[in-house]
Length: 352
Image (cartoon, rainbow, N blue to C red; front, side):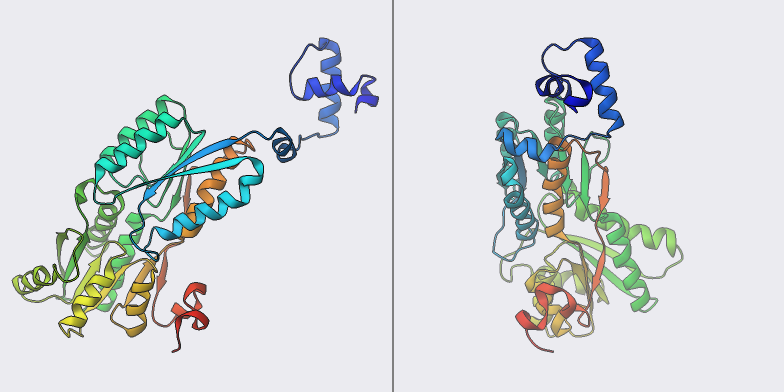
């Protein structure tokens, strides 16, 4: 290229990287040659050579036990971090309690103070997430949502399931599989549910199905909220609700704790109950295998964590255009197809 332009290699380098003084005519000549040759700089090679560090922050819920749901997106984050560390990417992990919005707020403050180049987080608590978003926007720090989405903000990208459609799908499964006069109980496990994003979206999608798709339905739907229970602290609550309603035909759990209702049904020896919940964690899979859980509505949490880190890398280092909304699949997992999910196949899960 330098030979074609009849200049030194250093002059070409200054034009490519837009540094130093170059005669305007010479610059124009070199730029024309670059265009003719369709030159593209090797950004990855430049990144490796520069040895510059790029720090990303990740804010996720704490993982209460090794196979809990949030261990999966966390594993995806770690896998992506390991792959990209050769390019100077450093991922700092911050974790908050799912039962304490103040812990989210405190970790968010720490992230803003650390001034990372990009942030990945789950907007778990709506009010605190909005405050965090405003801080990130004011500091011009790009951020990627995983697991749940928030509108009316300047997010770089969202990667996750459409929670509203997930709830709609659950409603459709109940509608097709229960009698016309059925009673369905929707259960939220957690604290401050009005401030939690995706369980409420799932509930809205659930109710919307019966309102918009089958507006003349004779099915009855009821919702209760239960704080995260101990071993059997909530059994009596369920007993009272079912008795008050005169019995129910189906239960929908809006998060990954459907196994707790499965434990309840086994304890009470209740067999004729349609049970649907979310997420392919091992406790849920075990009850799916035995038939206590009928359907699990699942997403790809490992992929969410991995893709979120990759998205920041593509935007910040590679300067690639980024798609704003990236919805992952909504899978229906049953006893019959469970073994075809690699983490639960017969080789490491059990036999039919």
